[in-house]
Amino acid sequence: LDLEPHTLKAHKATAPAAAHNVGRMHQHLLSHFKRKPGPLLLPSPDDCRRAVVPDSRLRGWLSQSGGVGAGLGLLFGCRMGAADIKRPLALLQVVMSPTGVQQVEVVPLSSQTPAQRDVVRQLLPQAEASWWAPGHTGWTVLPVDTHDFQAKPLTP
Image 1: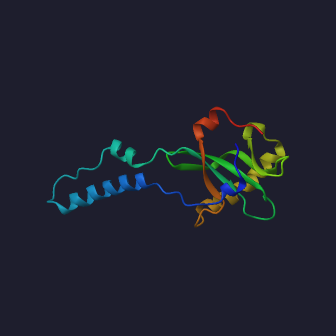
Image 2 (image 1 turned 30 degrees about the vertical axis):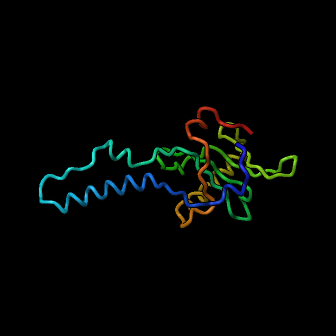
Image 3 (image 1 turned 90 degrees about the vertical axis):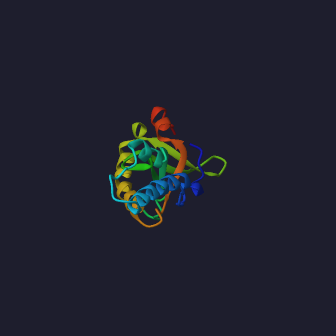
């Protein structure tokens, strides 16, 4: 996974298409209540599914602390826009390449040493706290699909 560490800074991703679809459903419900009383015509399950963007891109988190966890992070899967923040897929390590450029090394669960698994356990509460904090500090959306990563994980 060829990522520069500066791309793993938190940003607010927007989903205009999803917002538009949800807005249309909201307007549909409001218009119904403005009409005469009668049966409520709720959106179908298919309408609801179309309102959610089928986002399954990986989510990455890098620790912003200077102590334990500096230069480390976690990689998480995502399904329908919901990140699975309880089960990381890999450990992220910021390393210096031979050319002197910082890169992010991805260490899948299956390739982790016992010491790396301990680091993942220590980082998980920090990642989860950052997820729920305003601004999602340290989090980013990566341009790799969760299913593709799980089918063929990258190796260091």
